[in-house]
Length: 201
Image (cartoon, rainbow, N blue to C red):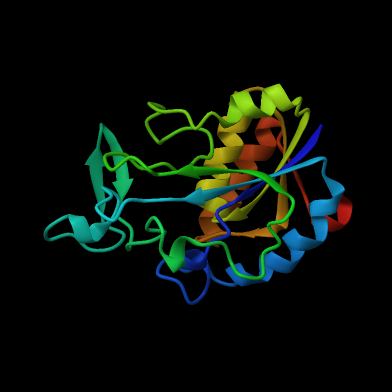
């Protein structure tokens, strides 16, 4: 079973959103063009309560992108984004969602952030995605979306650690910090995670 996992292609991560990824909208037609090449297509959504602990607005005296310690690990404080039920949390309007067999929502617990599609940042709560993929018989897992250096990267690493054969689709993803992502790509390739473009599928 060849599976595509589309990470967080949501309005708030688009150039006009509250937490914009540069040129994030450019991946939408690429993702639309590849969906028919997969047996199973899944998606994730950041889905935060408005009082989520990762929002800088919920910390007195803190600013966007400050880093605090949370549960013993560093936590970046973000602009309010992908608040449950808002337009910012919706998928980009041009994204083809008809083939999505399931949507996994993350970041729903107020007290901890969740970058990965599989677990929260402290690995305290599973989304159930790994079990779903295994029950579906997924043998090859391809990942793409936003942002490549955060939610896509953490999802790939968790998928790899869960035993999946993982491939990152580079031109169907955009990073928030391109320089940092170059280092993360090296880390992925050292683990044996494949990196390819949509044309190679």
